Length: 233
Image (cartoon, rainbow, N blue to C red; front, side, top):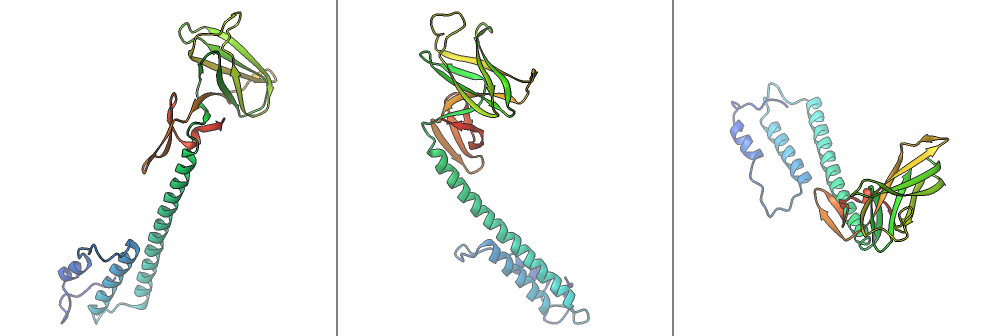
């Protein structure tokens, strides 16, 4: 911008100009940030035009450049406002969807399986189809494998499965509690590294935070996001 001359007759001093640009906002005006920025820019431009040096006036190129800057800043501010509005709308929609999941069983990434009265649910996630899939359950106390479930050939995707709690060679189900398990998937005799285990849990409640977003609270897994849910059962 052209320098404002503080020596010209009737000119405004730099101190007066800064005071004009930095007046305290009135709480009752109701002017939004975009309009406030526009008004501030126009006030500065008009003040500059009134107090420009007659020997070095503001040329058309400078004026056009400053108006272009105003348009750019205004556009960015409007875009930010729109994005904030979309973010709020998305969080509200996500919160509503999450609330509808309360009480539902879900599969999430994990290697634990809870046994209750000889019943349990778990799953595996196969990024690649396999010609042989086996799930092995381990006793967390002894660290020994207690049973292996043969799933045979499986296509790529989520494979939910149940376990009756029976250990190999046992006549009664194992004690209720939390056990661990792992998956072994092979294709043409070679192990697949992209096969992962899924644990069963249930959605007990939903938490919403402006910073962290929507969280699903699971009794065993803890707080997870909507993206962490692999499958709803």
